[in-house]
Length: 236
Image 1 (cartoon, helix red, strand yellow):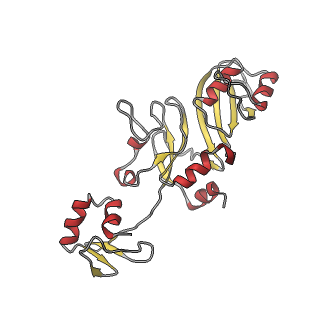
Image 2: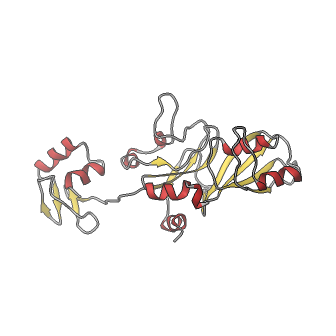
Image 3: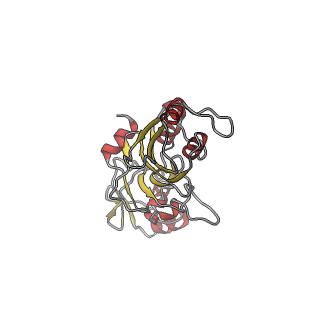
C-alpha cells in the first residue's frame, strides 16, 4: 500500500495534509524517515510512526450498535439522523455502512462494517442467516396464525415469504412474539404480521446469525466486535 494512502486512510488528513506531514519529516517506517508518499509499505509487517507514535493499521472495522428509535439505517440523509452520524470521527474514517436495515422506529442490533464480503454473506437470502426480532403486537396470535407465519405468508405485494420461526414469549396477554426470518424485505416483519391481521406496536432485533445484541449497550451506543463474535459471524 502507498504510504500516503495509508496515512490518509488512518485519518491523518487529506492527501495534501499527508504530503505536508511527509515533507516535514514526521513519518518513519521501521525507524527510517520517509518523505515520499509514493513509497510502498506493508502495514501488517512494518512499523509506521508519525512523530514517534506508532500507527495501528486495520483494513476493516466491525461495529455492533444498539440502534435507537428515530434513526435511519443509512449512510447519509438530508433531513434525518443516520446510524453513521452516531459514530465517532475515528470510526467514520473507515467508511462503514449498515449491514441490512432496520426501520426508523425499530431498535436493536445493527451491524456496521466496511467488509463488503461479510456484509453480502449476512444479507444474501441464499445464505439463510436467521435474524431474530421481538415484536409487541396489538392482539395475541391464534395457533392458526402461528402456523401461517411458520409456513410463510403472502405480503401485500404478492411476495411469498420463506418460513419463519415463531415463539410466544409473553405468558400474560400473548402479544410479545419472537420471530425469526432469513430474509430482509422492506418492512418485512411488520408486513408479515399484517398478513395475518396483526399490527406491530414495537419491534426490536436481537440477533443476526449467532451474533446477539450486547444488552449493556445503551440505545445509540456501540462497540467493536470481539474476535470471538467476528469468528461466529464468519462461521469459523
